[in-house]
Image 1: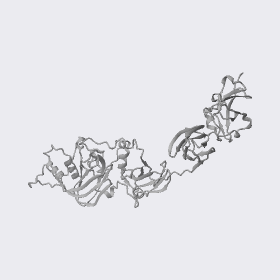
Image 2: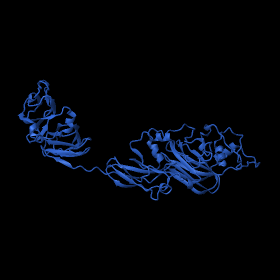
Image 3: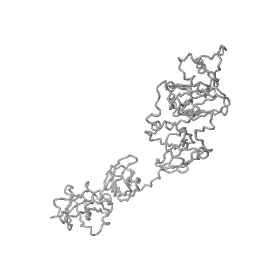
Image 4: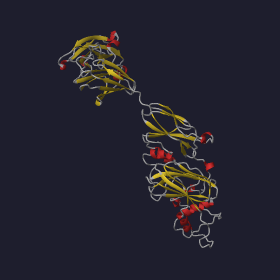
Amino acid sequence: MLLLHWFVFLLLLPLNSRTQKLPTRDEELFQMQIRDKAFFHDSSVIPDGAEISSFLFRDTPKRYFFVVEEDNTPLAVTVTPCDAPLEWKLSLQELPEEASAEGSGEPEPLEQQKQQIINEEGTELFSYKGNDVEYFVSPSSPSGLYQLELLSTEKDTHFKVYATTTPESDQPYPELPYDPRVDVTSLGRTTVTLAWKPSPTASLLKQPIQYCIVINKEHNFKSLCAVEAKLSSDDAFMMAPKPGLDFSLFDFAHFGFPSDNNSGKERSFLKSSSKLSRQMSSKPRVDLQKICIGNKNIFTLSDLKPDTQYYFDMFAVNVNTNMSTAYVGTFARTKEEAKQKTVELKDGKVTDVFIKRKGAKFLRFAPVSSHQKVTFFVHSCLDAVQIQIRRDGKLLLSQNVEEVRQFQLRGKPKAKYLIRLKGSKKGASMLKILATTRPNKQSFPSLPEDTRIKAFDKLRTCSSATVAWLGTQERNKFCIYKKEVGDNYSDEQKKREQNQCLGPDTRKKSEKVLCKYFHSQNLQKAVTTETIKGLQPGKSYLLDVYVIGHGGHSVKYQSKLVKTRKFC
C-alpha cells in the first residue's frame, strides 16, 4: 500500500512543489497527513475495490490511474456508461526508476517524474466504444501504472468505474445464472408475468440480492445507472459539476488511504448516498417505471394498456454493495381488447343494452332508405353513460347522458351510423336506445324537454298533494304512482336506488293513483295537474309519473318527493 500512496501523492501534488523528491520504493516510514480535503478535488486515482461515479463533458477526455504493485496480479476493470456511449481505453505504463538521468543515484525532481508519467503513452491493453457495460479482466497482470482514458462524443454524461486486484474475493456485482434471459410466462390484455432464474450470488453464496424490474415503451436498458439517469426528470442525478472539479461521492480517506477511524480496513465497498438515491427516485417519468420486488424470481405486472408493446429489464442488485448486474431484457405486446360485437339497430325499435363497469358497447344503424333526419332516443336507466355517434366515420356527437335524451341529426343518403356507448366507472349501466328516420311513427313515447314534476306547496294539505307535469303535442297515456318513504329519504337515495327504466308493471297495484290521456297542440298549454288524495298527515311520499308510448314502452319522469302537512 505504501507505493500506492506514493503514486497517489505524485499524481495529486500541486505544481509548486518543485523541491520535493520521489522517495524510493524501500522507504517504509512515509506517511501522508493532508488536512485540506480540497487538495484532492481533481483526483484521478481509482480506489482499489470500490466503484466510483464521475462526469464527462462532451469531447473532453478524462484520465484515471490505477497502480498494480506486484507482477502476476489479477486485475479487473469495469466501465458502466449511464446515458451516453463512451469511448475508453486501458493502457499500461512502466513505473519510473529511482535513479536520475545523470546516473548520480539522486532521485529526479518530483514534478519531472509526474510529467514523465502523464506524457508516457504506454502500451494499450484494451479499448471499447459503445454503451454496454464492458469489462477488462486479466488473471495475471504486470506491475505498473494503468491508465484509463474515457471520452464522450455525444453529450455530457455520467459513468461508473470499478477496478480491483482481487476480483475473485470481491465479487461486488451479482453473478448471472447460466441462462440470464427474462421470460414472459403469461400475457394478457393488461397483465404480463415475468420469470427469471435466480442469481448464484443469492442461491450459492447466500449474499443478499434483490431484483428490480424496469418497464417502459421505448427500449431495453443495459444498466441500472442508465435507468436512474432516465428516471431523474428533474436532472438532479445528471447535474454537471463545475468545470475543473471532479464529480465524486467519496471522501479523500477512501482513495486508498487509511483514515483514523478505519485504519485496520484497507478497502471497503462504498454505498451510494441516501440523499442521492432520494433525488434519483423523485419525479418519476410516466413512461418508465422501476419496481424492486425483493428476492422473488417471478412477478406479474398489471394495469398495462392493451395492444401496447412494452420493454422489460431485470437487474440483480447486491444489497451490501448497491452494485447491480443486468439480465438479458425482453419485450412483449399485450393482447388486444376483445373485439366488441356490434349490435344492429332496427328503425323505430327499442333495444335494451347492458354495459359492464367501465365497459363499452357498439351499435350500428344503417337506414334502408334515404332520409333527411335521424333521431336517437337514449334512456339511461342507472348512472350517466357516454354516447358517441359517428356517421361514415365522422364524429357528430359526444355527450354524457342522464335519464332521457333525444338527439336529432341531419341525414345523408346511404349513410351508416356507429354508436359507441361507454359505461360508468361506478358500476354496471343499463339503457334503452331507439334510432329512427320517422320520428312521427315510433314506439318510444315523445317527451317534453323538461321531465320534472312540480309540486305546489300552497296547495299541500294534511291528506293531499297537488302536482303538475308537461306533455307534448302527441296524445300519450300518463300514469301516476305514489309510495310512502321515511322522513330521511333523500334525493340522492332516490337516484341511487331506482332503475329509471322499470315500467309501471313493476309497481304494486296499491301504489297506483290513476292513468289518463292528454296532449295539446299548443306546447305552452301542454301541462296537466293532478291532486293525489288519501295521504297521511306529516308523511313523505315519492311520486312517479310514467308516460307510455304507442308501442307499450314507458319512460318515467323525474321522481318527486313531497310531504303532507302535519297540522291542518
